[in-house]
Each structure stands twice: as structure tokens, then as C-alpha cells.
Length: 187
Image 1 (cartoon, rainbow, N blue to C red):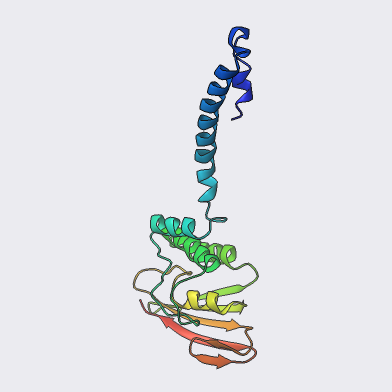
Image 2 (cartoon, rainbow, N blue to C red):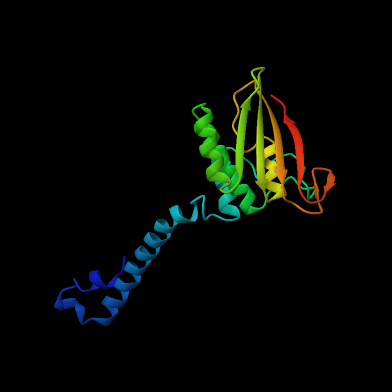
């Protein structure tokens, strides 16, 4: 809202009075500022662009704290903004998941474009997720911690992730080149 259109509505009887126009401009500017702030709030809390404290507030609303409670490669369980955003997006999708395998693939493709996921129902209350081409070791740890892929209640998820990480510590072991990590997420 700009205040000029409202100032132009003042009749000629008062428009030439500088004190009146200054007083009216000050009041209208306060209203304009408050409207601008209230209009900026939704965009500040968009999940794709929020940072820092805004992400923390979104995490409270979504029900996923930044501290995931699982120590990661960097010996911290607190996520940076990019990985926290990924976990929040996955939490939202997991909460709306319809229970079908097809939607798991949709979730995966949205979270990790360029990586492949193959799910296998082992028919014994377990399922295996074969993941290839993960480039980020922290994202691989989030998958293995059960924070990305939804699973039915009572079903154990076995994750086999192949990464292209070279000479970095990955879940307690040093890998070089192409490595396959097998982990289980308990039911």
C-alpha cells in the first residue's frame, strides 16, 4: 500500500495545510508499514526459502525438531538449514503418505532428484531400500536414520545405500571410492 493515493483524496481545503498533511502522512505511513510487515510474514515462513529461526518455528509446527537425536558424521545431531529443510519436507510428506509404494517413489524423486531408489517387499514384515548415487553423506545418514523414506508401522526398513563419497568418514567407517552401506532401521 502506498500512501500517495490516499493523500491525493484530501480536499483542496486541507491539502495546502503542511501540518495537517504531515500529520496524515505520519499516520498513513504507520499503517502502510504494518501492512507491509504482515504481508511479508507468509513469505518468510515458506519452507523452500526459510532460514534459521524461521525453520525452527516451522519445525515446531510440523513436529520435527532440528536436533534429530542421532549423532551424525560430524558428531552432532543438529542439522544445518539445507538438511533440516529436507527432513521437514520429508516429515510433511510422510504425514500425508497414502501407504502406497508408488507415492514413496514420488517422495524420493522430489527429495533426491538424480538418485535412484528401488524398494523390495521381502514378504516377511521387512522391506529393503536400494539407493544409488547419493552424493551427500549426511543425506545418506538421514535416510538410514529413517527420517526420509516412509514405512508402514511394524515393518523393518533395510537400507542399502551406494555412495560416491571418497575418503570421508561415513557412519563410523572410512570409505574410499564407491562403497555400499547396509543398515537396518528397526520397526
